[in-house]
Every structure is written in structure tokens, then in C-alpha cells.
Amino acid sequence: MIRRLPGLATVCLSVLALSLGGLAASPVRGDDWLEFRGPTGQGHASQTGLPVQWSEQDNVAWKQELPGKGWSSPIIRQGKVYLTSAVPVGEADLPAQSLRALCLDAGSGQIEWNVELFEQPAGIKVHGKNSHASSTPICDGRRLYVHFGTHGTACLELDGTVVWRNTGLKYAPVHGNGGSPVLHGELVIVNCDGADTQFVAGLDRGTGEIRWKHERGLTPKKGFAFCTPLLVEVEGATQLISPGADGVCGLNPTTGEELWRVRYAGGYSVVPRPVAGNGMVYVCTGYDAPTLLAIRLAGAQGDVTDTHVAWKQSKRVPLNPSPLLVGGELYLVSDDGIMSCLDAQSGESKWQQRLGGAYSASLTFANGKIYAQSEQGETIVVEPASEFREVSRSQIGDKTFASYAIAGQAIYLRTERALFRLQQGAGKSATDK
Image 1 (cartoon, one colour):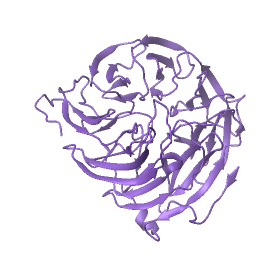
Image 2: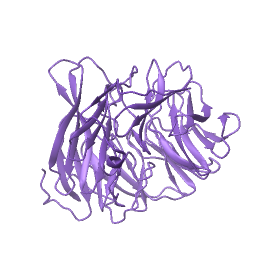
Image 3: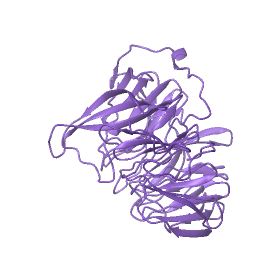
Image 4: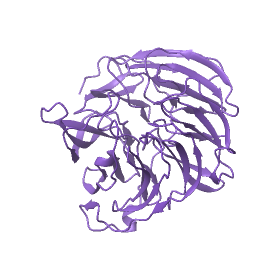
């Protein structure tokens, strides 16, 4: 069901109005990385010449210590890096948090601006594998959009000037916020899945006004989820694929109208972002028994649970890292470090290999290779192939949950305390900033 919500009652604006002309984005360069998982939202980078091995000094162009903590991934726009962070305020056991957006110079690592957007009250607990700033920002080439779950969504100019703030997306989060925004037309779209209510919302990019809300209409025992939706083209039209607890739906992203749904009763805390290709979308169903569903998109209308699921896989399916589709093969890494390769058409297993460590970051395809980043700071690079072929291992020496950003010939890796720019040929003479 859909509720259209005109008006600005829930929106704090720093400007009275913006013309449609003001929304026009400046040209986007091919090496920009503007959202979670990059240009397609599916973890693919076209760059070559990237490093495949590094240490805390070797192939490190710079390292910049960051204020606070956040597991959001960085994004890159024309030589600038944008990310979010939460800075504790006070000395309480569960202190208040200053929820912030930051901009760094990609060439030097220098922090250029650091803006508070919301203050989260004290007493809010998050899961040990989460943070208070886990949603990756998104950029349309002209403005930056950041999301902190029910605590607020905001739009900024790229110089840090706040355009609008919205605090009207109310639900009861569990374990903190998560799930990043996507952009379609004049809308910023976010999943809002709490213990009490579950919906998808489309906000006006110019004002922050809630333009539509799609209530999921399910009755899960545990309703919370943290998934980032995916925009795909299906039979000449754009669909928004939005997984949540107990089911995934395909929506018209302009209106919020539901086109189809697939149910998976009992799935909750869904984190991995879907990937799409071969006429299908691949969706992970979350805790407690994760399953990977390959859903055919052509002709999907209404409840297609019994008609459009091409195959299922329940072995070593990730709870947190997003899958990766490369050609006709689908790659997964489970949270406990088992990497798998499946035939994307049939679901047939080609290989499984224990990498070691625990994993939360999503797989990335770049430089013609697959990069897997463990929570313990180790990167394992493998060849995309029908048999396991390891290329290299690297250790950065700090905890890592965030996924990569890639621009130019550099990899940007966020750890618990710092942001690294990794580049072939940078050496031990590079100075920490």
C-alpha cells in the first residue's frame, strides 16, 4: 500500500525553495565512485593499474586519521572524498553522538570540512558489528545526500553547506542504522525497516519532503533490516528492488507502487545489497538461516514466490557481505570466511574455499580481479575463474568493516580509525597526514 504525503511538516529547510533547474547535476566523470558499491551499485570498477598487494606503508599514498567512528564506505567525486562519522559527545556509557559528514582532498588526504548534521541522544545502543554512521552517502554530481536512519536524512552542497534536513522517517531501529540511499529522478529513496514498522520512502531531492511511502504490508516476527535497494532495468522500465524482513519487492521508483513480491518467511536483519544480471536479481534473505534466491524479473507481477524463483542456495550464504556477479558466475563470501563461486544461471556450485577471518565488507571487482576485505584488515585478491586462484594477501593492521571506493588508479579503504589511499608505486616515504 502507498501513502502520498505532501507538505513540509516534517522537514527543516535551510532554504525556502529550489527551482528544478537547480537540481541539474554537473557532469559525472567515469572514475567517480558516487554511491555504495560504485557506479552500478554492484561492486564493479572499470579501473586498471590498481595495486593487488600492500602493507601499512607499501603502496600507501596517504593515511588520514578520522574523527569518531563509522562503517559507511567513502565515495569519490572529482578529487574529493566524502564519508560520514559519529563522534561521541560526553562520557556516558552510551553517549550522545554527533552525526557528521566529512570531505577530504583525494590527493592529500587533508580534511577540508566536517559538518554536524544531527545530534543523536544518549542511551542508544548499536550492535557490536554496527556503528552510528553505517549508511554510505550518495552524490548526484552536484549535491551530497546522507542518511542516519530514523535520526535524520540530509542534503548538502559539495562545499558542506546544508540544503535541507529531514527527521520525519520514524521507526524503531534495532542494532542501529544501516542501509544506504539511492537516487532516481527527483527522489532520494531509503529503506526504513524497524521493529515496529517497515516501509520504503521517496524524498524530494530538492526539499527533503516525503513524496511517497510504501508500507511493506508484511507481518514479520522480527521486522528490522538494513538493506540498500537496487535500481534495475526490466523490460524497458526502471524497477527498485527492495529487500526487507520476510520478503523482497519490486517497486515503481517514481511512485512507490508495488509491482511484485517474493516472500521468505522468517528472514530478517537483511544486509547484503542485491545484484542483478542474466534476467534475474539475486537476493540474500538474512538471519537466521540465510538463503540466496535467484528471481526471474521478466513478467513478474503480484506475488511471484511460487513462479519466479529460478533457484535457491543455502550453503555459505552471507549475512552481511553483498554478492558479486562477474559474467556468468556469482561470487559470495560468508561471514565466517568461506568464498564460493556459483553458476549464475543454475546455482550450481563450482568451488568453495576457506579464506580465513571474518567478513562484513562487500566483494569488489576491479583491475580484472576480485578483492575480499576481512574484518581483521586482511585483503585477499583472487582471479574470477571457475576454480579458486589466489593472487595475493595484504594486511593493513586495523579493523575493517567498510567496503572499498575506487577512483582513478587508487583504492580508498576505511578502517576503524583512518582512511587509506592505496596506489601502486606509493612507498614507505609517504607521510601520514
